[in-house]
Image (tube, one colour):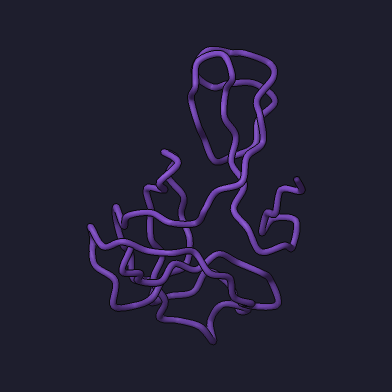
Length: 118
């Protein structure tokens, strides 16, 4: 099975898991940040989660993003157990269930969370 990941310009969220201690995390590493095991596994996330926090960005950090401001950045606790930061719908609330979709922003494929009923 090929792992899809937006950082590789494919629509998907990839994460890592430790076979030794069962820890999960989002940023790729060559070792487990919990126990130090050197054989983390790459896994495909389903893209569903719960909103943990939201921030409205009114001043874009670059000229590329200025046309998109204001926009919302969300911290989402995924069903797999890791936390991810991504763009989000403006009307989301903390505690709501979301699904990851993907959008082109400033010519880059980025994850974007939207409300879901499940």
